[in-house]
Image (tube, rainbow, N blue to C red; front, side):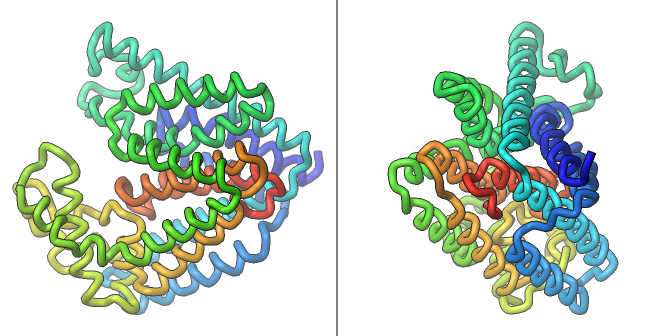
Length: 387
C-alpha cells in the first residue's frame, strides 16, 4: 500500500466513525482526529499553501501572546494542543485534496453508513426514553446513573446538525435524490427531539444558507460577508443593552440568560484590551471571571461560549480578523452544482452558529469536530482545493 492510499483510508475511517462517535462519545472526536491525522501525516500530502500560510501565521501570533497572557503555563498548554490539532487537521485536508474519484466514492459511502448507524442509535435512544425514562434509556448502558441524561445528547445533536448537509450530499451522489431526502428528514426529526437549542438554531440557519446557495450561484458571497461581519461585530453586538437586560432577569431556567451575562461581561473585557487581547487561554483567568452574578453561575465559566468573542478576548484584533478572513475564504469555495453548494453552505453556517452559542473554541472534542467537518467538506467539494 502506497502512502497516498493510507491518507485516503484515514479519511474513510473518519467518515465512518464521526457520526457514531458524536452520538455515543463526542469526546472521542478529538482522538479520532489524532488517529486519522497520524495516518494522513504519514501519507505526506500537503494541504493547499494558503491553509499552511494562514494557520502558520495564526499560530505564530497565538504563541506571541504568551508574552502577556495571564497564565503562561495554561496558555502554552493550550497552544500546543491547538497546534497539534491543526497539524492533524491540515494533514487530513491534504489527503482530501489528493484523492481520486474512487477514493472519494469510498469516503462518501462511509459517511452515509456512519450517519445511518448514528441515526439507528438515536432512534433506539428516543424509543427507550419513551418506553422507560431518560435515566433508564439505552444510554444508561454506557453512562453511569449520575449522568445528566437531559443534556447528554447536546453535543451529539450539534455535531449531527453540522454533518447532516454533508451526509445529504454524499447520499445524493451515491444513492440518488430519494436517499438524500430520507437522510435529511430523519436527521431533522432526530436533532429536533434532543435538548440542544444550539443544534436547532444551526439547523434553521444552515437550511437558510443552503437554500440561498442553491438558488443563487453567488449566494456564497453573501454568506461569507455575513459570517465575517458577525465575527468583527461580535463584541459590539454583545455590548448591546438587550444582553444586560436578559442577564438582569437573574433567571437560570434557560441558558440564554446565563449566556447573556457571559457575553456582556466578555464584551466589557474585550474593550479593555481590543488590540492585542488578554492572551492565549486567558478567558478563564481574566479579572472578575469567577464573580457569581447568581449562586453557582459565574460571569466566565471557563470560556465565553462564543468563538468570535473568545478570539477577540484572547487574541484581539488579529484573532478576529483571522477568523473573518477564514469565513470569507471558506465561503468563496462553495461552488459546484446546486446540491453541492447547498450542502457546503449549510454545513459552514451550521458550524458557525454552534460555535457562536455553544462551546469553547479550544475544547479538544470541538476542535476535532471542526477539523473533521473541514476535511469531509474538502473531500466532497467539486475540485477539493481546500473548501
